[in-house]
Length: 222
Image 1 (cartoon, one colour):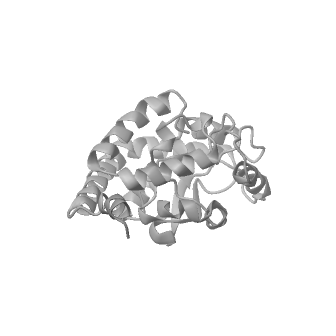
Image 2: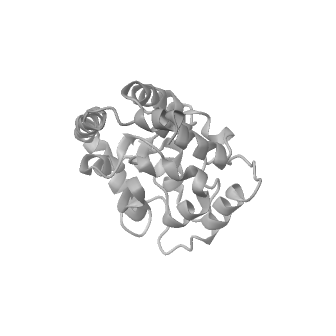
Image 3: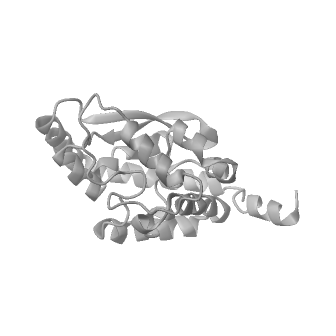
């Protein structure tokens, strides 16, 4: 391994950094869960009362080292849907030479998706559907900051150049989410995931968390 490559990998292996990141995840996610529990209960009731099916949506995603885990979200779609629309959308954005940027729904989310309920569309625009992932963070399956947790078939399409994104836990927010999500191509987003892995630090995580708030308010971190 060259000195440059060693330095890139070594930047993320400073003793105590992973422990400090995990401690930060536990403290902040626990505080957020306590504060947001009344809101989560209201959203749970809203989803349950406006469409048929459970309020929580569970889906297998890939975590660190591509180990699968069950991601939690508030359900935004009608139940018993075919995911062919989503597969075709992601395939188009990842196709050879494609530079297409995301639609208004943000990367990995279709705008005007016919499977999404009216309440679900609002939850997606506000990113409130992601709040149950605080439990994934508390359990250690995710981090507050990291690459987006992806589906297995999505990961298979990324190619070898982007596999380093799986060296860390996926996050609720990340570098590409606060870097103009709707203006990026999917490959640009994947490059930012890899860049995050190479540059990750406590300071970078703090900057991303602080930038997530205005990005959400401005609709740029959906």
